[in-house]
Amino acid sequence: MSSQSSPTSEQLYRLMDMLDELHSAAEEGRAAEFIGLSAAELAATLREIIYTAQEALQEIQAHRVAQIPTLHLVDKKIDKVG
Picture: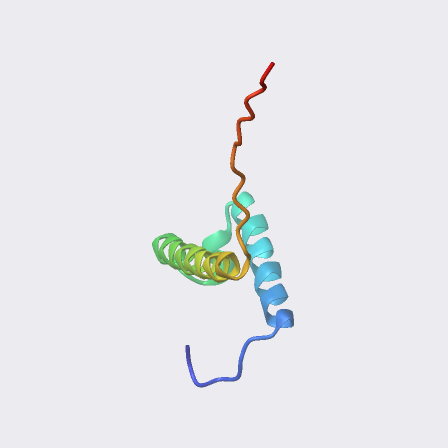
């Protein structure tokens, strides 16, 4: 990450809004014009965004799982006499 200050939730919401607007433009067939990239550049950039988001999500989930204690259930058979 760059030396800029940490991102805020507001910036994350702005990113989501921008991606939503891009989606709307794509539905109308004008995504490349909307963002100012060729279709190939836009597709490559979106793939990189998706990859980075998936990696971040995996890291978040891995850290969360490591912090949650695991409960193991054991099947205990009881023999009835009689």
